[in-house]
Length: 614
Image (cartoon, rainbow, N blue to C red; front, side, top):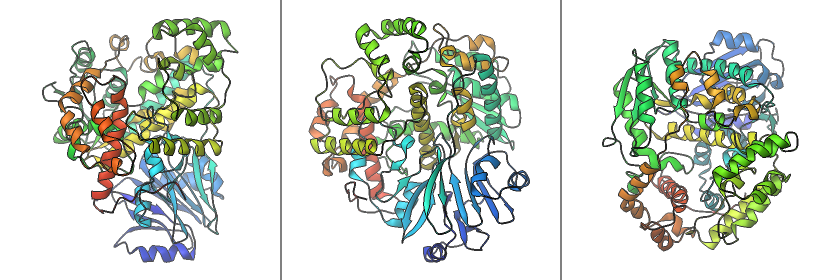
């Protein structure tokens, strides 16, 4: 049975609600008062709990804490504000939920690999790690405006910002904030995590990254058995394989699937890694055995709480899990998040242009040549001091504008808070207006950026999208579960602490990671400077599976909701469609699959799309 749980405040109304829910034989933890606190099903799912006086703390997820160690940590806690410090610096990826004298404190992870959502059920505040759990209690349907906003590319990170979700009456807690309930049920959020100041030299920061990665992988291999890991040949996944092998507590199975492009040298580097890991079991899936991207999308249903762009990849990922499960794997490690952490965003030049103008201009010149962008446009963008709120307002206004011809160079967006989002050509005017309304509402809340520096803000946007993706994959795909150590909070904090000018040295490939892995990964492998590309795999899948994608348009629920024009989308799927349109396609396919899944899931409900009134 899938793990699920919900948090209840220490009130009589909450206790009465728990009785009315009628959950048969639930797992249950109680406040010191005896009222229900945590309710759900989690037996055998790695939940660690401890009590000390009227303090109760539960850690739910992947970590190495024991009940005795947790009890020692909370022994001196007297107020909910002290919980964050008591459980700080524990490696892994997990929720922390506490009740102290009837006050509740709860948080997920800053990376969004673990999240919290909240709603009021019969007037009682309730929280859960999944928005769909709360939507089920409320019998809530999808929010049409938010669904329209999910057609944007590049996507705006609603995961990172918190606030509205795809479900009416369900709200997301921002990942770097904790949920606090007072004794009377009043609710607020407080910041529990802050990004580090990026001021460490490369060698010092690399030592922190090394320690954090060693501990993160240790939480995966602890307990023995067998774990598996992707071995693409890239530095990120390869490093995890060597770390897992070095721990020696669990047997290791690696899996490499071959790409279509003969120019992709990932296979060469994967073979070098295999030769240096003689004690592991190595699986290779040939290009002919690898499922196409978009395979099966015509009839796909996914038990996710929101549309997921990786729906195109479900057949491939399911095949990976089936193969490693046959070799006894209980957990599968993947290298997602490494690119974002160890390849500095060009926006760091915007952050540093006034403090290091000559160095920034020299590096900007190299980028301009690589990206073929004019000097005036690059200088105007890198010197712009506009805040994040202004960026959101501008993005909202530009959605309704015709696209510029020629389109702006991608480098300009990467020097800003993030590349400007656009709606697909097949979005209806109603969808464009709805998405613009969501962006304007976000701007009206005047959100602060995720970090004062644009470069760190950009990285955190991407890390939180990755963390949220792994969370959704674990909800939707068969076991073994996925672990993404590069999204563990300690790893993220260590990687962000480096001075970006040292982590982005021209001519060096991921110097922070290679410095951290020196002595763990063979130096011959760390000298790799190329990166595998999988565009050929994408386009082959698109060509071969065009019929399945078109099948999604028959009776399209997005079209029924007035969000897309299926005839325009059919034309875009033609062989000679513009090269930019497949990126938009992934978000549209994800939205259509999600709507059909909601309507035909394990608890079917009529899909009634409603606007943003809350």
